[in-house]
Length: 286
Figure 1 (cartoon, helix red, strand yellow):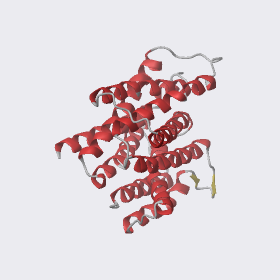
Figure 2 (cartoon, rainbow, N blue to C red):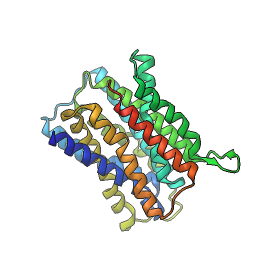
Figure 3 (cartoon, helix red, strand yellow):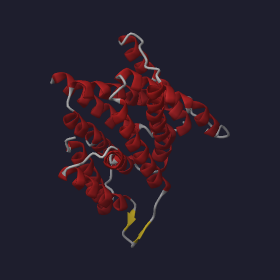
Figure 4 (cartoon, rainbow, N blue to C red):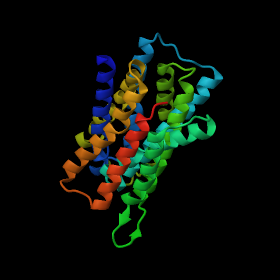
């Protein structure tokens, strides 16, 4: 019990802190596209460690490569959108939206795998649907959908579909193979991120640039690997709620504390409904 609990708590802590501060380098003049490159490179270290620990065995059959690349590309695509989203909108709103990605996973499982969900799963989907309009609602009587909101929705969909493919892959693939393909897929986007970087503007290469970005993104990379081990030693119905709801909640609390002010009542209601929906979806037994 102490093994899975330690891994799950460490993942929640790392992802919660990472989410709150991932946009800081961009605020100090280090482009979000370069932050993505830093993140992709930080994935190499834990991938190399887990491969070495498993004897360097990587599954290379057609199914494993297809699923591995699908998982990796969806994850990396979501990451590159996230680094841009946090430069446009508040993290305490973005991460609760992203935490609703299990809605997509559940819907795909219902449609494609003919699985069923219980009352908690249905309640979670309802709360998720109710929460989304509140994040960008204006009390003047109209809704202004900012770019950050659209990006957050796109990330939610990408990571929800990714989780569906992870579910398929776990039946035939090892954890180290899944994580290694995630790392390799992240590296594939580096030329894209580099090409999208606006080098006509000054790039901060000091401590608050690549060095701070490296420390922050290592939290994400190591947290992802720890999550693999949390699911290996613990039950999904226990581990999932701690990560899917706990990490975004921690991110929101830290971001709100740093901001020093509370959002309006509609946004607070959206945060509460989103986190409650994510928790219910995660607690729904398979």
